[in-house]
Length: 131
Image (cartoon, helix red, strand yellow):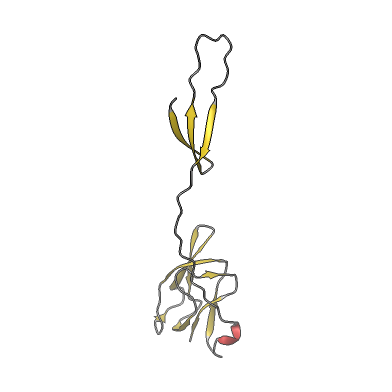
């Protein structure tokens, strides 16, 4: 009896197929036996736990840059103290499998960064502030 390994909807099964006697006049489906196989485990590190500041945490006179949509920060393009121009890319936010570049709303200096790569953010969360 031949054995096969079959994946159905992401689950792996070992399958044994029984050959039929060809002398039978009636055709019957082959008898299948299924045995569940343990799925390999994937080690994933949890996303960093970061408490994002409230709007009151940004100093008066500073311009907060907020998340326009929910997602995960995939890269930071600036560091503390960097001078940025209006429209310059500050960071990349992955939302719904699309990379969205978050740009500076105005020229300034990066005063504080409240996120890091891998941080999950919601709409309106403060990402960084410009002075």
